[in-house]
Image 1 (cartoon, rainbow, N blue to C red):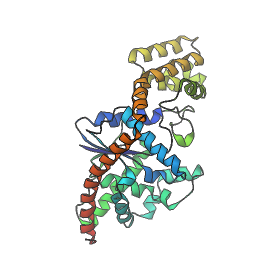
Image 2 (image 1 turned 90 degrees about the vertical axis):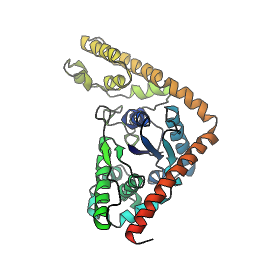
Image 3 (image 1 turned 180 degrees about the horizontal axis):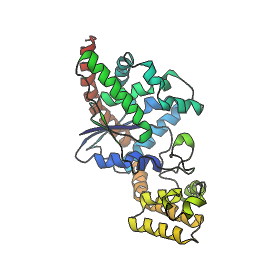
Length: 320
């Protein structure tokens, strides 16, 4: 099965990225044909500092390699190293209905957060469609709030196939509901856009500050029927064993188990869980040239697939 997914280099990767998507990406590489890209074209809608962009791209690559992505099994590359995707995005934009794009909630949400309402931001779903379709992707792992963009991709692909004949593979979504939405420190979905994240490789001092900001709800904690309503408990159980998770639940139900104690347990669990990844990342970071060589090798493999798809599209529409 061919899988495709991307992550924006728009800031430090957090545990919501890991449990919401990245962990699943690593699991899928065994026995599947996986394409994972660093979405720097998409990040241009919010990042205007070139040095920040370069640094973030390297950081995302380091994070993926550190958590176990194997470039011999999966294709990892930088989006902008495959210019064919922008060419396809233009072709798709000629059939993408304005009404369809105007209904996309991502654009409205970002504008509401004072992100500049640029054409690139509005047309984001078209470029995302090109990202998916150009690699003949069969499955696309998404979190719930990206489901709409995949539906847009499917609509555009079906419209193109109807007009020009069978050209694109129609991708299917894959959502792991148990971890599709990881709560942030304010209880909402963990997202850089909400400034409510806990960094995957944060130091102990940084973790203390981040976990200290977790909003607690006494009613949710004290209700023995719903201990899972506690954000600390929810985050802890993502990394803890079933027995450890049950023990924290027992302590909350028994009473006398303070938020400070629970946050301390969560910090230790994060350090323990991500510790081996951190060590691997530190080793990789000493040789950035090797990391960029891995990205370039992945880009070469991705370009070969993309060029075949683009040639097929150009023939269908009469540009070749």
